Length: 151
Ligand code: ZN
Image (cartoon, rainbow, N blue to C red; front, top):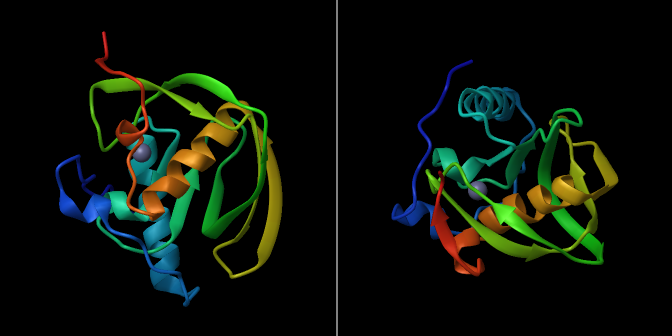
């Protein structure tokens, strides 16, 4: 496992759409392991593969409720709304307020290709939306009301 370099805003790769994962092989597992280590190294709550320069629909999330891997995720329903601060490892030193659904149900595959469905709320839901946006080449700064420097 190794910590990979995180691309930052201005790098055009971050605005590209990621492709579906089709092979659930050792290469994917190595990528996921590296993504987990990279996320932890930067104290992040989530990381999408595109942030380390790999245009594949793979995400790792850990908001303190256990580590989870989302391959080819798809949000199938959402409910309510929440408004609050968001940050991104690809936009270092900044944060901004973003409106997100309070509850999100998504389906995804695990690293072995097994499909699962999960419903999450609060920060977990915010994180899922944020990371899924990355897969479509979108950064939160495009939808945030105001971007401020971290204190
Ligand atoms: Zn991000």
